Image (cartoon, rainbow, N blue to C red; front, side):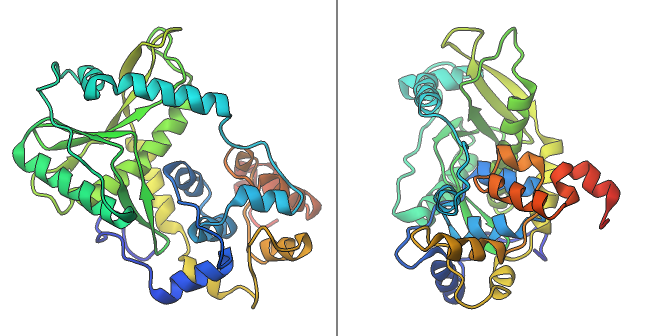
Length: 331
């Protein structure tokens, strides 16, 4: 992107031509998959991968695509972990959010507001969220936004992101709340999981900064509230996590992404990523977009096994890790 993520205006709606082109790549009858913060954090960690940028931007189901070309991967959250996470989030947000706000130091159900955020479509929900943020800031009142929808432009295309919650402070600060089901034992949690949560939260803060830039007296906080089960119980506990480093890295990496329309324009005629297409046709389509495989992809991308096999077959240095790839350059 040519514009800085600090100063850019709110996300532009894709042009009709771009929307049509992405629909053609995805398959006209295939519904697009939304680009969430976890995918954006993974994309920011590997901005040189045009394959992921295009497939995510077009809303392609990469898990179905990987299965269709014969390289399925055990990627994603288990159903049990998903249910446990939902149950814990419901516990944290019980009593109309009073439990969550207690962790913020706000006591009593009447000490804060919970505005209604429903609206038609993602654009409507994002606009309603922005309005609620501005109203809460102007009123200088504690406000809890439950599952707000935020918009962020990524490689020339808008992404709609849904954090667990955002809390507006009376002084105008906006704090992202991340609710995770991994435990915090003796006030400490697994460093790798906390790091992943921080990278994900950084994407939300970037989107909040877009709205705060057009709201008088507002500031997106550069620390997030991480809420986890305490020790081995289901009782919630919270800790503030400084994400300034993750925020800086994510902002820089997303700014390096090649615009999606430029990647799409370089594709051969007739390329389609519809998982219903023949496997050999889909494989050729996937191979027509440049990838940047690294071992880290195995934990972040559904196509990682396919890309790893191709990288090994080609003797690509990146298959040994990003640090080694950086040291050896184009060797």
